[in-house]
Length: 223
Ligand SMILES: N[C@@H](CCC(=O)N[C@@H](CS)C(=O)NCC(=O)O)C(=O)O
Image (cartoon, rainbow, N blue to C red; front, side):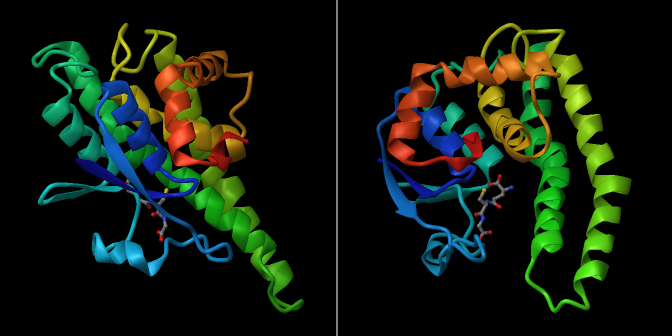
């Protein structure tokens, strides 16, 4: 039995969704973020030394890192579904987006989250203007232009095909959901990018996506 070590409001929502799409039975072990630091509880480090989510256990195996988990589950349980055939252009695109989601799309979004917090963090009054100036400068000179670059790129790619790897829905779309939901929640992704907006609407309408939300509990990124 696959166990998903699931942190609230996190990337592990994607793993629940993938398992629902695959129709694989699984159990969910829940962990709650510290409400001040947003970090995972120390208990998660007993599963994997980094203590991050998602991490899954399957018998003797422990698999961390969402892209690796997606590859493992699709290969072990997918029976050829949710992945394009090897050797096709779609398969290469699939691999690309699977890596792009965490390797390229997430870093600027994470930087935005961190610098937004720096701007509003409670610090002594004489430091506040300096902290705000540094955060504002980092955001306007680097982070926001990078986010725009990525959103424009993804929008253009989805103008070429319905899903990221081609005309069929694949696990790469599941992997891409997290940066796009993050961007919609806090980095300005809105109806001015109709392809990305339609992508989010399509995935949110999938029955497996809805079942995964029921299993995972509140997922604030959707706001
Ligand atoms: N690249 C990793 C990132 C894992 C990660 O940072 N997960 C976040 C949740 S979205 C986490 O566990 N944060 C809590 C912490 O760092 O303590 C993946 O895709 O699995």
